[in-house]
Image 1 (cartoon, rainbow, N blue to C red):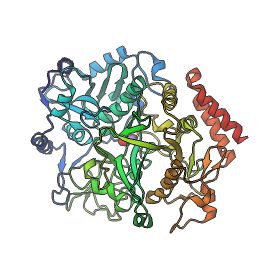
Image 2: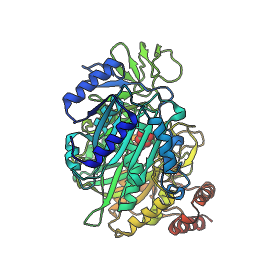
Image 3: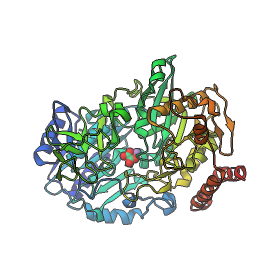
Image 4: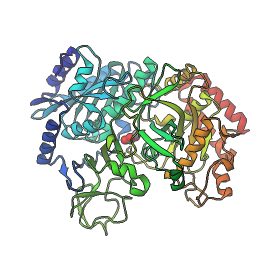
Length: 588
Ligand code: OXD
Ligand code: MN
């Protein structure tokens, strides 16, 4: 175990509060994990899937009211409301601790409290940070084991005096009216109660690696971002690394694991995955920006994942994976979800547990936000730099979202500060990853709206400061993409998926200064001839349309941006105001 007094004192306090019957330390050994799997199967918490077809794979079903992140019940409790800012839910720490303490009081009576020491990032890397999660759910233990590095090695790295993030989770009775996901950034503390859904309870992920870490990054001079990290290898064997921020369920996992179109593959282009959701970025000694993926697995959206759309993600789920809220094929105990193939099982258990005939069912067999938790090492295209404790140097940062009209297929920001503005004005149609209406356009700066652990205006300022610390020729170039543009009939205009490689190639060529671009009102746009459409059924006119800027539509968006920024008052950095003025003038 550990002689770290800070861990031991806190544990004693939490034990006194939750009053578990037993306390079990997770040591990270396979024997202990296997025993927990067996226990979870014996209590019905998990179902063992077909061990020949899906070795090491299990199934878990959450309560029907507990299937997504709950943004309206997620709080940032800083000393003052201003520190949390206008887009976060806030409550004074004292008041919130009092409320939570009454909810946790005796919450683990008759239950076991598991103590999970975990590292975000390779154990011992200078980028990495340690957390300890206390939970009464075996499902959480087993997911944390896939998503992070857990066990005794972490305690060793923590040492007798190291600091850590305190994470407390109690499942309780999953009452949605008393569900709270709460962050105290100034106390390095996370408290989650009354949920068992991944994004609310795997506290290393959104809660630590984004909300708490973004605050730590602001204080310590680094960045925690909602970004995938990929390496693009050209036929000469050179690899350039790209980070991309898209809102939840907008294709980060697909882009991170992209398979190039056949003819580019034949030429020798490849994509290597480092991460599909979160990047921690620091400026290296050479003045460039370096990224690690703090996670060790993928908590991916299952629906829509197929051999065709994401062969690599699907391959990653074939062993040692936990499936949550997908459908089960009762005939062979395998899994199914919408978009996997065209053959829903006839003899099927849908995600709610209802027995149905998959050929005649109504609605969805799998929940639209059903997930797989798969170890990153399973992924056929995992990068050999995945465990590199120093991270990889980033050439380009890409922002994007679902926009039916406004944004062109791709454009490049003029410089870092303009890029920060492009990120700050991101907007996207909402998805099933969070509770609430789906398909509504909402502003989601840097895809961090649900994840920023402090005032968003200060977060913009932090981005600007980070840029000021890098020479312009060393800082990543910033781009914006939109794979989701639609024509007047409502059809997607760009094929997406593997063909997005064509856009990535333009981005890398721009970083290398190999291709010109035309300056437009919103930034640098590609010349139509420079987007490779070989073997694609896209006419020059269609591509021209995809790369066009409709000034009237943009003007409307600018008005919305202005309204959005107004809520930050004087805290909004002057650089953002200046960029907004420039855009307005350009569009006049
Ligand atoms: C996720 C999310 O699970 O963004 O990655 O909701
Ligand atoms: Mn995400």
